[in-house]
Amino acid sequence: MITLSDTARKPPVSVPPRVRFKRNWDKRLSFIALHSVGIAMGVIFMLPILFVFLTAVMASDQAMTASLWPSEWHFENFVKVFQKAPLLEYFGNSLLYSALATAGALLSAIPAAYGLAKLRWRGQNLFFMLTVAAMLLPPQVTVVPLYDLWVRLGLTGTLVPLIVPYFFFDAFSIFLLRQFFLTIPKDYIEAAKIDGCNEFQAMYRVLIPMAKPGIAATAMFCFLFTWNDYFGPLLYTGENQDHWPLSLAIASFRGMHHVEWNMTMAATALIMAPVIVLFVFAQKSFVKGITFTGVKG
Image 1 (cartoon, rainbow, N blue to C red):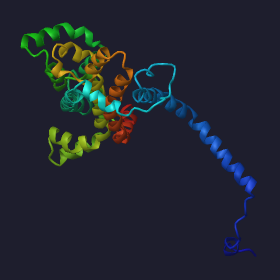
Image 2: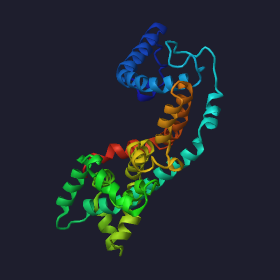
Image 3: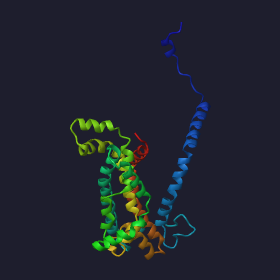
Image 4: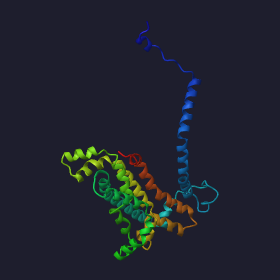
């Protein structure tokens, strides 16, 4: 009679090297087949960044020619761009614009999204539909009345007209946070109210800590949009070079040095670096926030 202990003592069956190699090769082929689309998309997205970097370290007479690989590596181009334009000042303007606009969008969008997702009041659906309609409205439609307003207030030529509107209403941020708040069960809010919390305390102490991925995704979307915004700065700060952000400065830099494409690409690479670093550090929260945003709880 064969017992369980006798079966356990049997040595493992050895796999021939040829079979082991075939299994490993099949696993590798399966991995490539499953991830081939992602690998191809990654390569496609990396090509423009690689092109910008390679052009940035080329000599001026080689840039934008048929030669795609630098014959000589000129890393000093990243230093020369600071001598040709006050990029640090423009960087400070962009950082101020993006940081304050993101903070304003979150401060105004979180209470509004909470009211749309967790409260029940008359006109709620109508307000939500107006928020969605505001997302579909092109910003150029409201340019003339808003520009006239800021001219009357004497604030054109500064970053104020770009930052202040985010403290009052940002339709996309409200919509995104509202969708994420719907994934959080209402039982947590009701339990907090039973413990004596009011609506503001329930939102601040319960909902916001649980919604950090959604808030991080919303903040990144707003930061990226304002960092790359060109139309708004051109409209309101075009007359005052001291308040130009990087998006506007790089366009004028390319105009002043349209022959020196290596300098232009070096400046572009420096402008892209903060955004890439931000995405790398916030990637997990960003992906998690986007994943749960479209799921209604």
